Amino acid sequence: MIKNLQIMEVGLRDGLQVVQKEVSMELKLSIIDSLISSGVKNIQVASFVNPDRIPQMAQADELVKRLPIKKDIQFSALIFNQKGIYRAISSGLKKIETSISLCEKYSRKNMRMSVSESISNLKDIVLTSKKNEMNLRAGLQCVWSTNYKGSLDQDNILRTLSEIMEMDVLRVSLCDTYGMARPYDVSSLLEKIYETFPEIKISMHLHNTNGLGLINLSEALKFDIREIDTSMGGIGGSPFIQKSTGNIATEDTIALLNKIGYSLEIDIRKISKISRRLEKIIGSSYFSGSLYKTS
Image 1: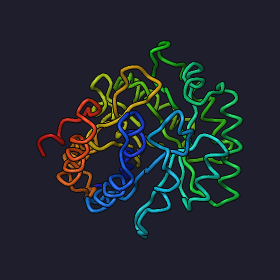
Image 2: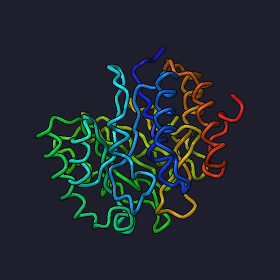
Image 3: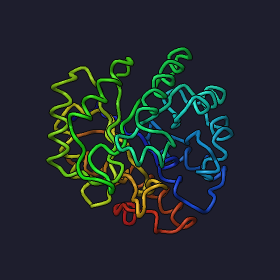
């Protein structure tokens, strides 16, 4: 059995950021306890962003301060700027994720800055994280395609990755933000990336807009992928993309991985119970997974 693969549960951040009904602090903490009980070791709990833009994240600081102390559990948050990283530091977090867009239009919608500005901003974030001994994962949004234009130039992706690698960042998340990736596109890009940067560590952040999320994941697993972002029940999406859908569902992903030889020791039934509990509170329209309904 293959064991060295990590699942990062992003439902509390990527999932809830699009939900309009406020999810209480107590429910979030209860979900975190249940995720830990199910065997999940890596949980992205929130984003330190402007609550006027993402109201669901208004209590991020308090949530992090109330997280249970568990030696074998890694909690993290998404940040986009210096204010965000200092909020993470003051809350006690030691692990953060950040990302920049390859699409100019989405960059301005999501981060309110140009792509070139976001790269400069990333350099400052990396420096601050190193000074404070934080574990940082960088990311690229809109890697495969967007609603604004066709497939992006692979050479541009490699150039941007080169800039990130020069910042001494080895862990990079590839985000199919719009869920437009196709299996061949995934394998073709990963082949070029590993040929160019053999030392890189890639995480996959896939959305299921066109129903190809797990198929794309299967292609990615042919390469040295050791971290996958998933969301309980397939909840989520970007608040800045019309008709956005969630990440690949945690339950569906684990079921697939178990069948092809990975041993993750995560209880699908417990994850599904969390998803169904949340569904009763916020409604079913946010969920794109299938297995959570029956397992």
